[in-house]
Image (cartoon, rainbow, N blue to C red; front, side):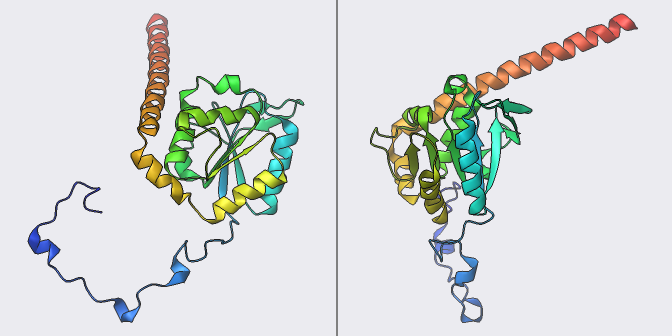
Length: 234
């Protein structure tokens, strides 16, 4: 832990004898998330990253399947408001990609639909990359499978990423199985050694920064206009 925090221990600190276990208790499995690898997922939260025109039938299947397992779905989009599905159904947005980071969820789902709207969205790519880096299970449906490229995932796929032509009960069950293990530990070694993942991370951060810079310019312009209007009125 000290190495990760940039702390170097002295020889004296290294020679200190650790305190004895309290009451002789070394480990209590009831306090460990990993004591039961195939544990219950009830109460977990999954982020669903919406596009401009998601497939209503798939989303309905997804939401029903997650609810059956006691898992909460959080619909995220690039802005607040509502998103219209392909059948005209309006979906309420619970949060934005930038405002509801992947740190707050247990898994991420990208349904099929109009993915073109997300291709240049820095917040979307950054969200997915952070989820990948933090070893979260990911489900990609339909055209969303093209999102594997920035993550440096091979064409044949890899453990921890569920791919499907369309969301169905089988693909959701596969994601639930991954969630029961809490994290995709096999991915941690790749995060450390693969320069492609690091390169993609820098690209997404640059895109994210450019988007924020654009927003700051817009906000600054808006404040300037408001100031000018107020001065004119006075």
